[in-house]
Image 1 (cartoon, rainbow, N blue to C red):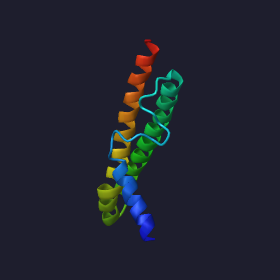
Image 2 (image 1 turned 135 degrees about the horizontal axis):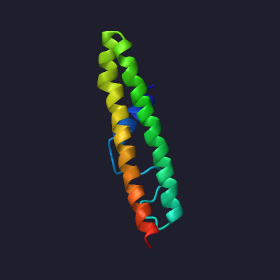
Image 3 (image 1 turned 45 degrees about the vertical axis):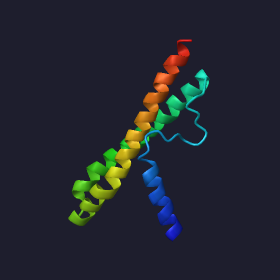
Length: 103
């Protein structure tokens, strides 16, 4: 159980690192196909995390006050940081794709 808690906490902190690439992602890739692929990957992740954030935000007002506080202090910030990170990485790959298309 302790190792799962450590993994979850580590995963939450990794979500805060805006520059952290996904396994297999090479930000220095010269491949236009790779840039297109990562634009697609990050577009999907932004949509997923934003939808989860929005669903939770709609649910919170219906929860008991203790659950509201916990969700607002823990769940929303983690989801929000993931949305921010994935948007940041998406912006990078959109710019990179444009650079590679311009060659």
